[in-house]
Image (cartoon, rainbow, N blue to C red):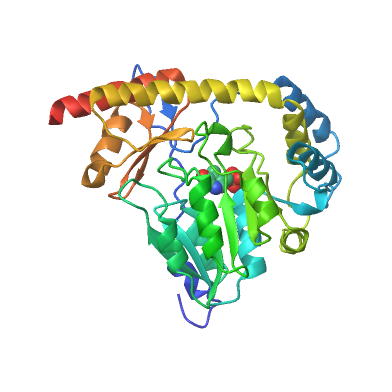
Length: 361
Ligand SMILES: *Cc1c(COP(=O)(O)O)cnc(C)c1O
């Protein structure tokens, strides 16, 4: 292409590709399962589907740009004023709103690595600079190293807990110590996409920390525990000046009518959804116990997935899964993430993991 033609920004050429979970490859005689995107395996609740069907009758109209009903429902659920809440088209988009609101070109955003693969993309697109701090040997955030990485250019720090893809949490105590060290003008985003799957009492109380630290933002989504990944809705909870800035950097009318209605209906159906989450947690415990029995030593997961730190063996393990019509998520030569979904998929994962060990030990 000639250089006299319009050229996309150079930053696009260097962006890591966000690899969505591939559709499973069919294998004769086997039901294919996609356990590569941390999706909720349950079909939508009837009450949520009804709300979406009703909303569809009005889709000639724009949605409520202020997300009023959703923010009111979240306000009641979370016990914070509606002014503290900003919504977006998935929490990835809300993260984009955060970086757009806080960072000028060249400003630094610190986060752990490996962590959520959307982070480097969102940061680079905003023209900001990623500072990646390696996880510890236990596949956990190294919060002291992250605090030590703060410079005069640092505007935002992302803390992913439970961490995608390793499933580990930072503890409340660790996060409190960390917040005590971070300068108050640096925004600390606590990404709790998998919060609802956590059972460890040492996990942070992010909303309490938000009340104590005006530089904290809590990021949540309806995509995982609430099962609305296809509708794209997430939100941030922050002090009102920050929340207002996040509403200013949102795509106007971004969260669509169906998504707003589905999210409100899902909060109303919370008890039913919690039963499903409990079942997924029990399924995760079953898978972890099975793998431990086979001799695997994996980081304990507080999310709806497990992490196999396979290093160089990562592509081979993913290929072994693919041969059995099971799509998992390989990360280069770091490891494989497998979502806890249908029990049949977990059973197959356990069989493949057992055969893998038997062949190598
Ligand atoms: C899945 C996920 C999200 C949420 O993505 P949505 O855009 O809300 O679907 C946010 N953070 C992490 C770490 C995730 O894994």
